[in-house]
Length: 321
Image (cartoon, rainbow, N blue to C red; front, side, top):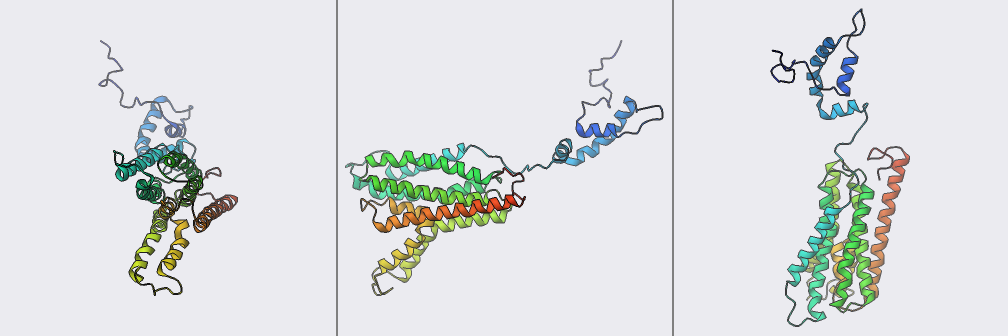
């Protein structure tokens, strides 16, 4: 009775599966006999002796050897469509709306009844833009194309917020000018955060990513910190502080100077219920915010172009933006 070679008990322990590129190198480098190339049995013996060494290499080294020693960044992620970001942003806006307005409409639905809640809603949206979005990206693996990923994320968020802003004209007394100012403030806040992410989300250094997150959170919260500190040192009832001018004027001047870099404060300012049309000071703040975003992107792109010109891109490939 002949034995079946396919059974595990009768299989030759050196009857090995097909070999990969690294194992093929071992067989090719096996010594030849004086009569000619080494035979199959000797090749299997050499391969069996080399298997422990190949296992010690690890999967990453084995892949690099099979690919001819090419460099791979296994700790980075390629450019992706921000589906998760869009879903999380929509949930953030929806939950903020439910918490502020509830499920049932007010007893007397008037534009004035929605004003304070709308202001807080846009402050919440600003927190999501300035803190939630960087927290999501900087807690993940480094991006292989940080600038392109930031641009794609920004475009997705700009399109998403249009669904929120324009229907609000049905329940508020916003004019077209105020609506356009709100959209401009949203675009400036998103562009500024995207510039920060384009600069740091491709870095492998945890220190640099943590510093970027601290900058994003600090810029978002600095107006509120100034307001609290100003109230401590200059109570509203003390009109003698900060002469010339009242306390309100002095405090407003300090806050106006930092509003362009704070998404929550900027959006809350333009979503306030009164006045109907933004005053000239608010328009100046909006122009400053847009200029700051443009300057941030100019600095980012200039630095990246110079880095690519020197032949040392962070992502490893010249096309990794």
